[in-house]
Length: 118
Image (cartoon, rainbow, N blue to C red; front, side, top):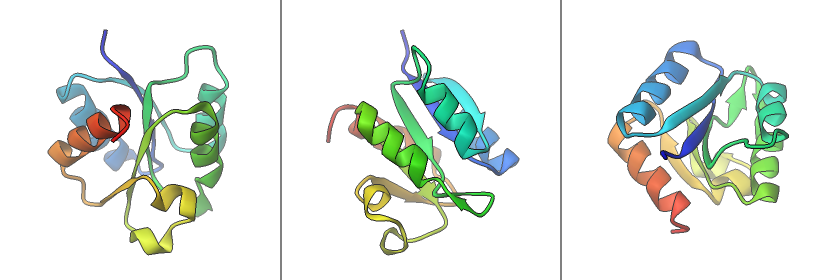
């Protein structure tokens, strides 16, 4: 069974790009979620995800609540953003941070490493 990856991204085309990259790498996509509330609802479910790809900012709002919920549940995640790591809150900056535009191979590699605890 392939890992379920939650995609939290508010830009439709970027969310689709991430989803396609994940599916090409053999993952199953959960979402995409354009809002913090949508992502938190999935995380509150019985079988939320094995890992996540998280945009740092969703429609001008911080996705820090999603980051914190992932951390509380021990779910690894990768941040994909236009911000540099030093512009992110510490819990996000501690994760692997990938810059937009997205490199699909780098995303797949970063997720594998995050899920392996590296």
